[in-house]
Image (cartoon, rainbow over all chains, first blue to last red; front, side, top):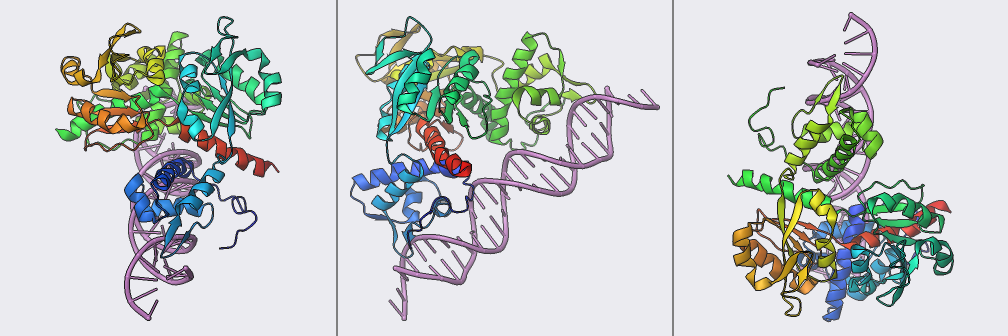
Length: 222
Length: 222
DNA sequence: TAGATTGTTAATCGATTAACAATC
DNA sequence: TAGATTGTTAATCGATTAACAATC
C-alpha cells in the first residue's frame, strides 16, 4: 500500500454521514485498546467491542483508503492516528460557543471535548449581566465583539446554545466571521449559504422518538 | 375516512426513525401556525415552513392513517392533536433524570421540555455532597432510592447524564425499576434487554462530523 | 503452503422522491 | 363541474449486509 499523495481527497466518493458518525466510535475503541496495550486488531474484534459489524467497519474504512493487512488485521496506533486525521482532530480544533445559559455553561465544562481535541476558545452572550464574568477560565464576551475576536482566533466551528428566536441571527453573524460549521441546539431550521454545514441536536426529538416507542413495544408485547 | 378502532396499531407497518424525528418538526410548526390563527394548511405550506418536502410530509403521515381532505388540506388543530397523541405527548410524560452534574442540571432547567409535555419528575445522583440539595424545585435524591421512588412515579423514560463508567450500571438499575426507554448522553454503547429502547446523544460525534466537513468543503471549493 | 483476514463487488434492504388516480 | 390537494403506488436513490477473490 503506497501512501498516495491525495489519499482522502482523490475523487470525493461522498462519505455517508452514518459512516462519519461511526468513525468516532471506532476511534474511542482504538484509544481504549491502545491504552490497554493491544497492538493489532481485526475487524471481528472491533465488532465485539463496538457492536458494529465487521463488514460495516471495513466498508466504512474503505471510503478513506486501505488500513489493514489481509490475514493480519490493523495496527491500533496507526489506525487511530489516521482516523483522527480524517476527522481533523489530530490537532486542536478551536470552537466558538455562543450562548452562556445553562446548556452553554454545561458544554463549556464538558471535559470530553478536550479529550477529543475540541477546545472552546471563546464564550459569547448578549446579556450584560453575564458579559465579563469568568466561566471555566474563560471570560464571557459581548456577542457584538465576535467579529474582531474571531479575526484572531480563526475558529471555523461554532456551537449555538441560544434561544430559538436568536439562533438565525447568531448563525448569520458567525458565518460572516469565518465560521463554516454549526452545531445547533435550538429547535429551528437554520438557513445557511452553500459550503456551511449544520448539525442539529434536539433533545425533544430524541425524547419524542423514545416516547413513541413506549406504545410500540407495549403493543408488540401484548 | 372511518375512524378505525386501532388506527395506530393495526398491522404495525414499522415506522422509520427519520419519520418519527420529523414528526416533532411538524408538531412545532403546527403549534406556531395555530398560535398565529391559521386554521387549515396544505402539505405545500408545511414544506415552506419546515423545508421538508410536501411528498415526504404526506408519506410520513401515511404511516399513521389519513389526516387531510383532498383539495382542502389539513386542519391545524386536529393534526396537531393527533401527532401529539402518536408521540404520546398529549399527556404529561414523566422522566427520571440520572446524574446531577453540569449536563443534568442544564437539562433539568430546560424549559422546552415542559412545553412539549415532558416533565422531569426526579433527579438522582450518587454524590453525597449533592444529595439533598434542591435544584429547580426538585430534591437531588440518592440514586440507591430509585427503585422505591419509581414505584410511586412510574416513569418509563430515563435520561442518563452520568460519566461513561457509570452508564451501564445506571441503565440496568433504571430498567429493573420499570424504565423502558433511555436517552443516553454517555459515549458508551449500552446493553439492554429486548423491549427497551435507547437513543444516544453524542456531542463529540456531532462535532466530528462537522470537523470532517471542513476539509471536504475546502476541497470542493478549490 | 495453509489459515486468516482484508478490501471490494454484488445483493439486499430501506427510505426518499416523483407521479397520479381518487376525492373533496 | 373545474381546480386543488390528498394518500398511495412505483421508481429512484443510498446505505447495509453478504460473499469472495486477493493477499499477507
